[in-house]
Length: 513
Image (cartoon, rainbow, N blue to C red; front, top):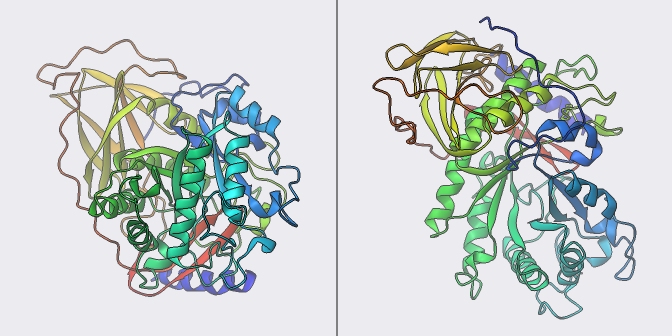
């Protein structure tokens, strides 16, 4: 990995070289659970439960690696990597647990199959020789009262590297999905099955047909696929660093499903933009120069973009740094190894507070500034940021006579509408490379109208401004830019694969980093 990192860092380096507010009390650090909206999550909250209690996370993901659970043979069920008591504690704290099943043990591999392809996959699901069916049945049955959502495998679209999680054919993976779906529903009729998280870039950057497209075609060829909704209930993406691609790729994959006559919920299960300048974990020759403040801004920008793209749930990877994480190139935790919190922790709290109760989100504008309007159950939150290296003045349509302008720190000040609009000056992005727009925009600002569900104090109810739209109806936005399939980018894209870090070299075309 070190040699690969060095080469890729050099490539990316070559390519990339071509307002004041009234201070308000920040969100308090205390152990009382605050979950403004259960649809926002953080991965592996159980590694820092006290911090998780104040983070606002409403759900988490737990990885069950088959090769750790049955390491030496079919009778070798050992202590689970995450104990039942830990899962019960997560649930007692109000966080939903989502399970991820991945990684077949070597003894279970098919004799003539590819990496991680289980033996007996082609057998009926009640045949003991179908090892995958037996494992899924054990896991779903064991956790019937703990876990409802199951993600089947992780990032199978990564290939040609030691970090690939699937070495079989797409047809075999379709069968893996079908078996998991049938067994899980048999074991727990309320189980919800997710397709594996897709990274997108590994196929797109090498001009290969996207794994999702190939998988949907393979699933469609299975008898009764249409009857059972193609054997999945939701689809999953892992998207990092670039705020714009959260929207564009989410829309693209929705389109792939629609082309097959499918409409399924989207979960963005992993996203983040880890910093390179944290003194507690400095990065030498980083893939992207990202400051602690930019990571904080990404929390709000990324979650808002996910909502605009129609994501049902979104989660940040991950809760806390841990011993051994330095094999990764960047620090992903919202909490450092010493227990201190990165600024992104506060930004996540602010985002989940002011975006809680989301009902509809629209990308109103995306040129030199991005504006996303979020209709909440008891008000509106409009998120805005400059997309380039210059400050931008914007006019934002008002739904009330006044609101509050809130930054990622939780600082807030009152703002009043003039002529049915608010006027804001959005700070420039700190990005140092010539890509326009930047991966992460300037400091995001939120205009909050109406109350908030949980967390920071809510303002008094705001009367409608004269001439403003009916406060029960969200404003009609301008049509967003139509997302297209991104051209294969150049530079470097950092991805996260379960507990492993992936680097990718991107062929030269359009610079996306």
